[in-house]
Length: 448
Image (tube, rainbow, N blue to C red):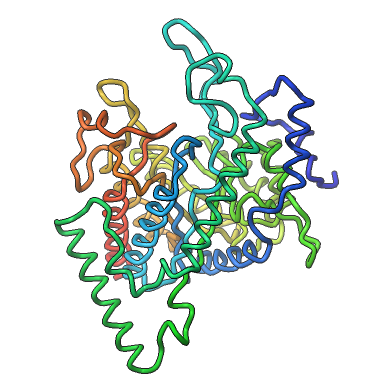
């Protein structure tokens, strides 16, 4: 069957809402089709080329950002803070790998979430589950839980504003390495991680001073003042993704212009999936979440469909097993992909498999379990001769208390202090920076 932008509708489409007013839905989608692209084909090609370097072991992928972006918490400071932490993490990881870090934010489009149950019950009332702000409201109210297509227009507007700010930060001097020492460390003001970061920043400053003495400065080398920064989200709400899918006028290729990188989730990864069908026709680099339920034969069929030419940088496999299951599952997955000769970026999502409920019923993720899954990933890849090429995190630049443990030693009783997520618990700035140092250390140790 010939691929078309809407050919996904002939396949099994899970986790896509049913809208009551189809005329309203069609009006919204037609409006979106007339809007400018959020990202551009040249940017997407640049990312895919960089991911090809990751697949070859010559770069490292850092993906991070919100579990689910919200309309209510949309603020320039929140965007800046998360961007800053990702820059800090990238500097730390560069020091540990001596490789370029490909920075991709879960931002400007991560609005929709699959849910384990289509409904939820509170105080005896059953309503549709919250599916993300682009679909319905987190407020437990009947009228607000009904899927509203107009929310897609607000999602587009927020994504456009976020991208505008991110481009300004990435290109306008905020990412200048000269300022690495003055980047606010968030809430970490003392302790070993703070001292390590200060020491690292001082070394960078010394290197820049040396380069400037040789005549290389930001005045004649613009690369020192800017950085490449991309966006990603799960391609879940296919009507929205289709409306923003365009043909590149220079190449004739098809791109989903809602983000540079999109992924297929663990719940929509199967051969007859509408999400797989949609992604097969776009030229964006693609992620595939791989949890304990992954069927290896089905995954190979999916790879055949998504990447028939086995092009490096096209596919990122994002493992998400949990700290207790990774040793049982990951070696088998690596072996099968290696035996098939597939070129993939190997990334680790240590968040989703480590979600637990605290004693009071609050969802959380123990930092120790997150770290253990990452450590096991690195060791397993090292033993298998494959390249642990990336990390995929749900995190924020805000001082939240959602994941227990870490340098702040957040306890279950602390969760109530600043638990702001609209969906799943995120690492805060300190925990993310601490994890970056620990990953850098682990990569050094396994390379020696």
